[in-house]
Image (cartoon, rainbow, N blue to C red; front, side, top):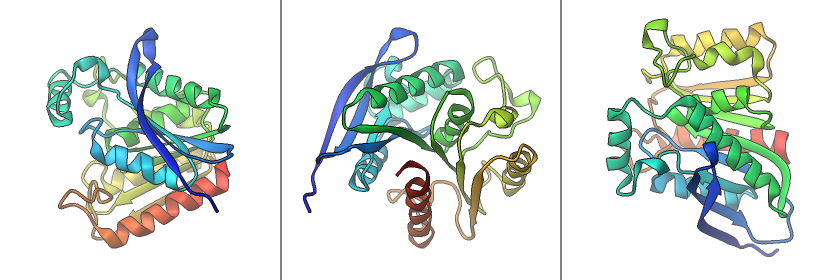
Length: 246
């Protein structure tokens, strides 16, 4: 069986008509393939998300990673991310606009089946919950340890005016949640609160909590990496996507 992959940077129209850079990875073959929008973490549009895009492509998904920090300039991802967080982050409305634009872009590609999911970790997990609730529509969503899905009123800001959990009733697709039991953002109590809200509105979801794992335990470049938990988590990710996208 033929196997091949193409990975490249592209430019796509984002929120307010601004063009943003994106990383696109796709299988080479007759298609048509389901799509994935990856929503990068607070550390920015970095090498791990390029690796993740190629990992999804190797499993048969046309995958795009929009650079949510594209308007903030060019340079090392960690430097751009530091500038973004010093300014209070990126406005949720702008992020949702960029994610929706990436979704539309995938659905125009002749080798995409039209079924598209989203995946994000850390702040990208938070944005995944927002996107799956506010955008019409993704077919599956994966929240990897998204912090600040549950927040107090005092923690809201003009750029992040609504806690994502408040949109639970509007969730438009099945949701997979992957969490570390030692994480503090989100805590296990916050994960339980989110799960209770999903049950309240009878949403389709799967939540998994991993012992001896904290934040970013999928990231092989960091001390937080836990390979046993990560391997099992990736297996659950692809089983979930096979169920709802393929």
